[in-house]
Image 1 (cartoon, rainbow, N blue to C red):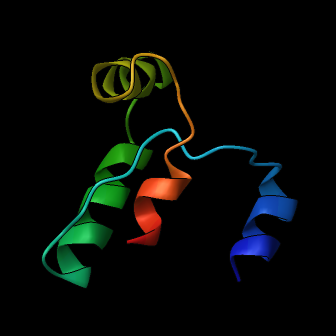
Image 2 (cartoon, helix red, strand yellow):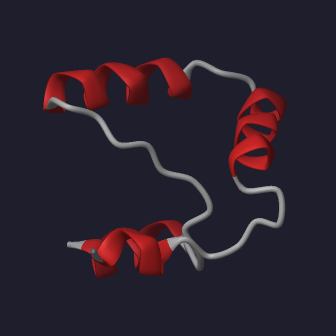
Image 3 (cartoon, one colour):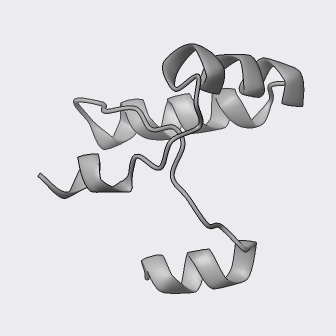
Amino acid sequence: MVEEFSKRYGTKVLVFFEMHDTMEGAIRREKQLKEWQRDWKIRLIEEFNPDWSDLYPLTMD
């Protein structure tokens, strides 16, 4: 499933993620972020990950 997403959208690195207690909370947040302007999203990423480092290894715990 992850490979299909990466191939379809051309993703190379994971630069941002959020943990949520419930699936409903995660879906609500995803819908909220989809409404954001691109520069707001970039600012959020840079506050969380200023070097745009690949965070994928952090998700493997």
